[in-house]
Length: 267
Image 1 (cartoon, rainbow, N blue to C red):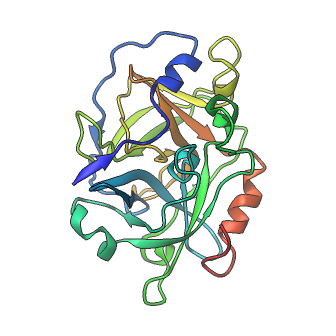
Image 2: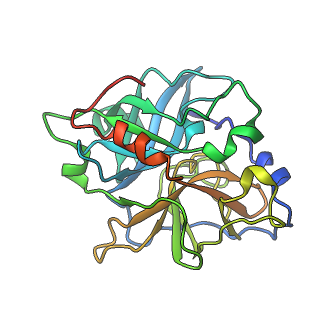
């Protein structure tokens, strides 16, 4: 099964970042194996391809919310979300059974500023989304797998952070959880052009397409299965830099909508 490349090109970050990149180090496999609160979003993209992104379960009253990137949901080429999307928490391979193993997405929540009829550079600061999942036999994904905390801006500078995802473009195959580690570094004027200001940057990381929407996690719990999500993977330069999009204060309302007491609701 061929995998669909994600629609926001790596070149976007390259042209928006103001400093050079060194050759990227390979993203390492997560040593502890799959993380129960981090998983893979999969959908049928047509033409024998699968659409792929990453995401993380975040704490919500309904126990059914996943944080990811807005460009995993809506793009200029596909302004409407895919008809059927599945989230597989703790994905550890087995792409052919993602519908049996996964939790269905029942509604998609993107910021109103994520208007895909506008230029990407104009909307890039709003590249985050929350997805509401359905239940399985009355069980919620959070009840079964746990959840991460969500932090909103401002993001603490210099905190240890791990960026996790399922890269599917060369040299990776999307079948294992990979990560890069560093410290939180908020982009400021002089380091980046306006669309990326306020984003988190991590250098020397070659996470590729498929890792979009993956969590930037700080403050890991002792069991290594959850932490605090401070951003989601937005774009990469293709030359060793990746940019995460933090959640602004306005994202609290979007999360509240996605995390209402009943799974589902209008997209």
